[in-house]
Amino acid sequence: MSDMTFERMISQMTPDMYESLKQAVALRKWPDGRMLTAEQTELCLEAVMRYEAETQVPDDQRVGYLEQRTCGAAASGAGVSPALAGLGQDVGRG
Image (tube, rainbow, N blue to C red; front, side, top):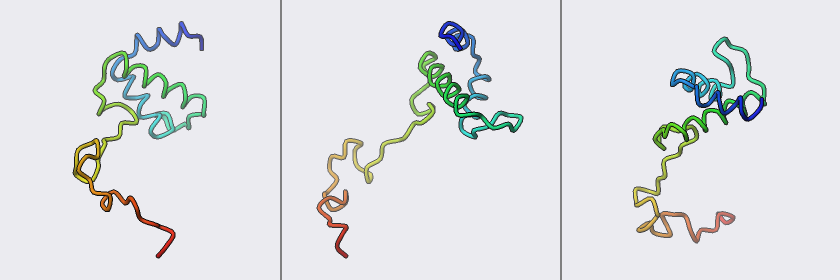
């Protein structure tokens, strides 16, 4: 697929098409049950990510989003003791 065709596809993608591609990537199969090839998965994922960037989908709704958590402390990890963070433990010794 040429870049121009891919760019045009992204610009013409509807929210329903986006959701369908997102589901296809997650399940690794098309809505009719056929499995996606590795190349199809890669292209669909790229299309989903480009659509999200261009339509400014909120970060927490984007594919691959992971919420940052650190033992109930600030996302920076400030205030987490070394013991809670597991630092300084020799896991090789029991």
